[in-house]
Length: 188
Image (cartoon, rainbow, N blue to C red; front, side, top):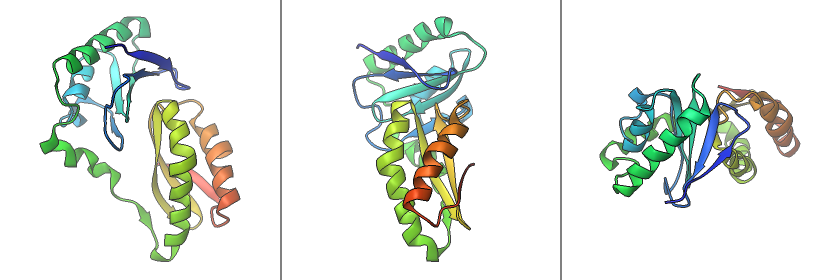
């Protein structure tokens, strides 16, 4: 198995490209071992001292570190990923998958705003999420209220020094241009 690594805009996160499907659909963001019960892969990565976050995408894994240095962590992470897939273990245990995806729920907006929300989510799905996934992260729509769009930044985007710039100068400008009802974008 050949795994490529790419830096992300977040210096604390590296993207590992596996050249194979990790998740058939969606993404999952784990911020600690206690959250990773449904994923044997994430559990094995959190066992590595210094790993503070694991983000699973369609064909990549983004790993966030704490204070450890990448030259110490990278070989351990590569080894854990290769061992996991060479043993044929599942990325997500099917019986536990529903609780892992439950945090995706909780989108909030007034029923009268459904058309506006549809426009917002369409723009996020087609223009924002693919670009952000290239950087090892994800942005998930969380709500719309009084002109304010609430987004949850995950993976490499969570804690990234340029995330505010991405939100304000990129996403907010685009949404305000295409959806006049949008006045602001805020992270949650």
